[in-house]
Image (cartoon, rainbow, N blue to C red; front, side):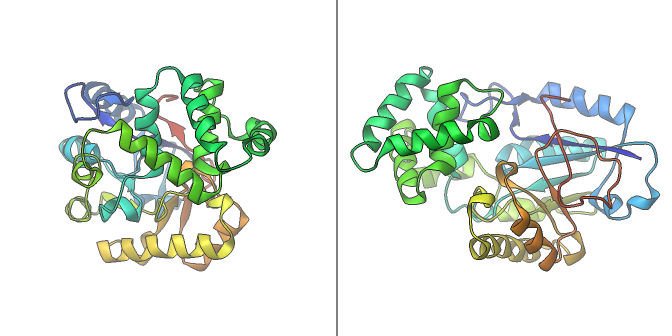
Length: 302
């Protein structure tokens, strides 16, 4: 048995949404892609994944991260039309429409600054007023091999690493919020409904073929949280899924940023999760082996 788990984020059209500067997979390309996948693979549901002993030959599983409104307004009708199953991973924070995720705030900030070196110098100047930036720059160089994204330039990677996990959480959230509010032209609370699907949207989508899994409560880098912090984050997300209508036997998690460690896996086992999805490239050949470290293929790499 071979299983390709394919990961998606934004799926939209050029005319769709107020947030036109974000990179996305075009709706037409998405339809062509799922037609191709349907022709060459058996696209399975979560229930079929759970009963994987019956699977044969080439299989695919479609997964969608972060709970965007695109998934409800564009992806969901297409999946229904072609009778295609999928798993959606939405953080508790977005399903309850509490606030923008920091990852999306940063995406919107970066989309407004083409000159990433200039942006970093602005951020660095702000930071030097409150902390020793040189310490974090040394830390960045030390960790860059593990956490630099292959699709980004050097300054973009430094900004991402600084504002996603390197800096102390209070400082990085303060900087992100400051630049985010300068980037958007409206109250964030009014924009949330145009960005994320809601709890009610998810409840409408839920079926035998469409299921939801955990993407954490607040989309944090789990490996940089201690055991208790991770446990509380994942537990909140689990309870939200159960309230949504996801069954205990259907619990799965996709790690935010692909970030996890041994504590994460211990917690998933303790909380009765069945599978954990990572961002490592690869094909699953044995679902019973490393079931909490399942690799995925990004739609850009498929």
